[in-house]
Image (cartoon, rainbow, N blue to C red; front, side, top):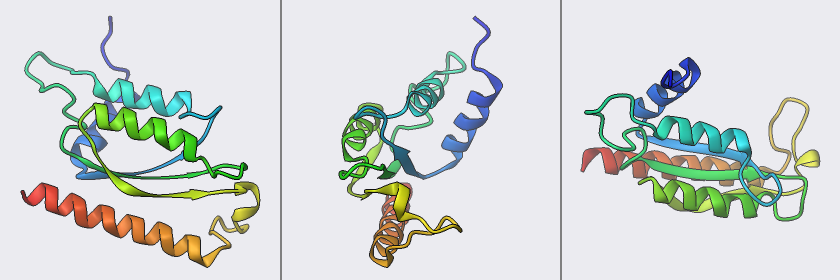
Length: 138
């Protein structure tokens, strides 16, 4: 009844100003977290009658990665996230990175201990930037 909460409006403005999204998502019970799903849903709402549907998402690019203490590294949650984003018009890159045994994967400073995974995350971010640039040029 009161429209979008202030935090949702701020989040939506950030999404609208971006060409793409690099989303790091944990896995909760084989899916996305409730907080992430709620954020996506709030930002999907139109604020005015003349605002195009899904204005924060349509035609944008996204890359996904996850971390989980389990052996699959959050993979099952990314399947759901990919479907959600695809259904609201986001072009999701096919590549993704999953960090398994997350409770052991990070150093005290927050960096990944495994240099190979660090390179994979960096490569995914580069691909996202390149793809988003192509979408915004076209």
